[in-house]
Image (cartoon, rainbow, N blue to C red; front, side):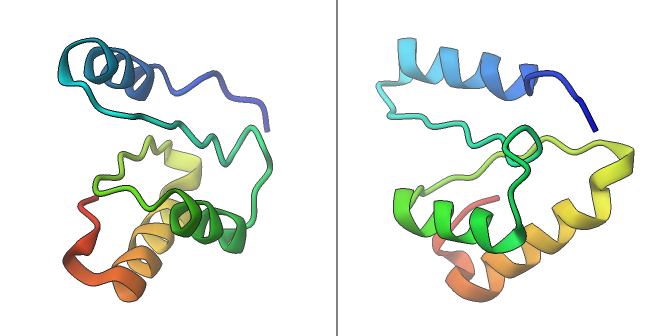
Length: 80
């Protein structure tokens, strides 16, 4: 499966870096062919306060499961 860069998240990241003085990291799980465990490990190592997700029709179930696992592990500490 080949999909393009998550452009919407890229725009938000660029704005936050320029005007919001936030440190931003984009983890492209599709491009990196990451497992669910890889995504959870990336969230744990970066420890973000906010998480943005791009979803497509073909991966909506996986995206919902990622969000569910993040909420189960960190509760309200992470805003998705």
